Length: 273
Image 1 (spheres, one colour):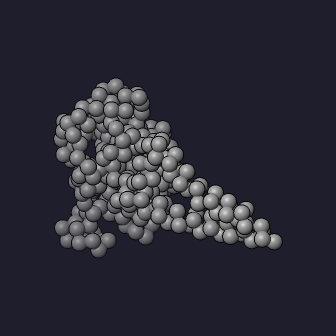
Image 2 (spheres, helix red, strand yellow):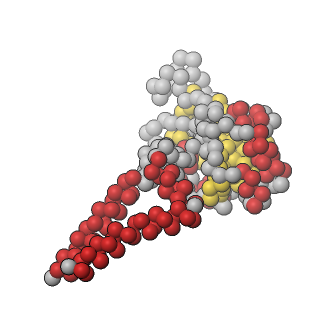
Image 3 (cartoon, helix red, strand yellow):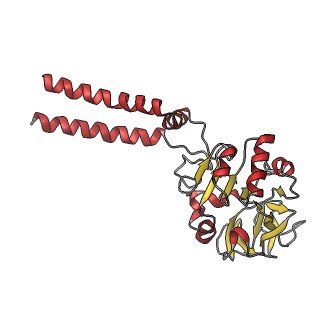
């Protein structure tokens, strides 16, 4: 009877520990790889690359730079140029314009112009969720005809890849209806210069949007994601400590031993009673 109670207590402790662990190892930060909610990227299948020097190991791959929030050093720009020259593809997904200085450093003519674009070309109540249409069926998006956009930014320069229908306007007064100085017209939301592409909608890669554009996501595979400059990390110190420990063999072994030690001591005491 005592042994059964012991196992019951242990099971409760394990379940409680599991719940606590999930709670402290997840976050609600937008785009974070540790966010399992609708606005995280935990479900996006992509291998993280934190040192751009490692790109030489992936010739011909596609690197996603998602909602960049960190500056690129001249060395970073050099590694990306070499990656592009060797046949790799770089896709920058940005809707706030933070990628523009980096695009300038790459000597690209493309720029992201933020705006509150909405459209009548939709089947949703939200005017910010609407369809983008392929302009050039080539490169990364061969076989993709449309994508569902989520309040994208405009992309200026380069050769257009995706654009909105003519029933699109910039909703300056944010009332969801055209009027005043707001006029209809097509808006380029994705363009490219060779193997460098810029997409004005970083939300296409969050968990809630992945199932909306399965062909688009599938065609990007196998996908790399820039973990050094993309907004996919977290400010959660506990999570960052676990990541560091996982990548440091000695630290990982020490933490594993510390985790097992209390259980072993508890069982040892029970046997001595």
